[in-house]
Amino acid sequence: MHTLVFLSARQVLQCQPAACQALPLLPRELFPLLFKVAFMDKKTVVLRELVHTWPFPLLSFQQLLQECAHCSRALLQERPSTESMQAVILGLTARLHSPETEAGTQPLCRKHTLRVLDMTGLLDDGVEQDPGTMSMWDCTAAVARTCIAQQQGVTGEPGLAPVPVEVRVDLRVNRASYAFLREALRSSVGSPLRLCCRDLRAEDLPMRNTVALLQLLDAGCLRRVDLRFNNLGLRGLSVIIPHVARFQQLASLRLHYVHGDSRQPSVDGEDNFRYFLAQMGRFTSLRELSMGSSLLSGKLDQLLSTLQSPLESLELAFCALLSEDLRFLARSPHAVHLKKLDLSGNDLSGSQLEPFQALLQAAAATLLHLELTECQLADTQLLASLPVLTRCASLRYLGLYGNPLSVAGLKELLRDSAAQAELRTVVHPFPVDCYEGLPWPPPASVLLEASINEEKFARVEAELHQLLVDSGRAHVLWTTDIYGRLAADYFSL
Image 1: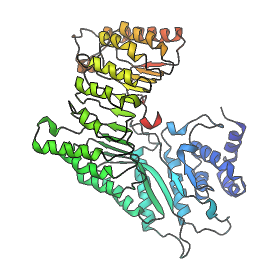
Image 2 (image 1 turned 90 degrees about the horizontal axis):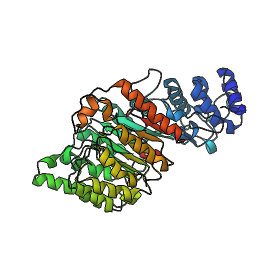
Image 3 (image 1 turned 45 degrees about the horizontal axis):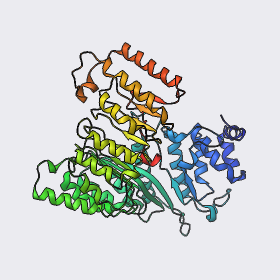
């Protein structure tokens, strides 16, 4: 639904040349709504002029493109239009290249001049690119080009230097874009356009390049470092981690696929691990830690004991955790603060089940998001865990994909979860009843790759949906779609 004010704003922008001429006459209070309408409807001429003449110190995508009182559409939940993003960047460039007054226009008042353009929070879904939208990779490249061009271009008449603008962005970098982004960060130093990275994600980047980028980032801006597919090992990690530890405001550290020097213990490997632990102890604001696919068997106590403050999000997928690791975590100060926990790929079916249940009990008051994909949980283990699982009264998301559960087990879970009023999403496996000739116990690889009886599964889906409707929970999503962007980011919890 749209309000009359929204519909009026949309009508005003129908003729873009006339709307641009009218902007100086309109109340500044209308600019935020006009920006959302122009961004949504791809009114690029008006959008460029809105940024060029923005009357407030801050222009924030997160504030302007969310659901609002005039329009329920949340544009941040969609891939941004390439045309609209380019118009914003062109408007910023025009602003930087304009003197404070131009013939025939109103002066840009320094009291209300734009100081910060916050482009963070754009959707980064990782799916195939739509030609009409801009991915985070494209956004990074567009902002980088603007920084380089600004440094190389003319900045205005002598004595009329533009007011500096800080551009806050989430940056994505890989081998192909590294040199370009490094040049952009260098160009922004001392430039009227200052690039400020909030979240950095580096994929498949050599160690020396990762260090070089970290050295160029503003220590006061960085919130998250996410290193993926970098094959660092403990040796490489011990080189990079001191450069990360200088970011005292860092709240999230994600170190995916840190492959194990520790598989072949050595004096050097132990020294590197101890050095890594010492550097981890330097973080004062860390709230999320992800160590997915890192070999941490029997070492979780050493890792978590070094941290200065309790974590609220902990991802330990495919870390080969032992019962002693889970037992330590359940008794640690972190457990009672956890909002998000990912134990995917760890076997919870044997001796690990009891300490896992103790961990759930400890985290029950705070846990919002629980991911247990491929944990070898069959009906027996699930039913034994239901009493403590259903005590997680605030739980919103439960991921159980890739576990050997039957239709009966899923129905029992559905019935017992009625007590969890906040639960909105359950990602469940295809029931073992729907496979043909399944070995028992079935390996996770078989559950993920074997074909299912589609007709039988369709009947199961209908039964589950009817149970939800009958219990007044039709709003709860039960799905087998693990690629549906249902898992929440820690900062959105």
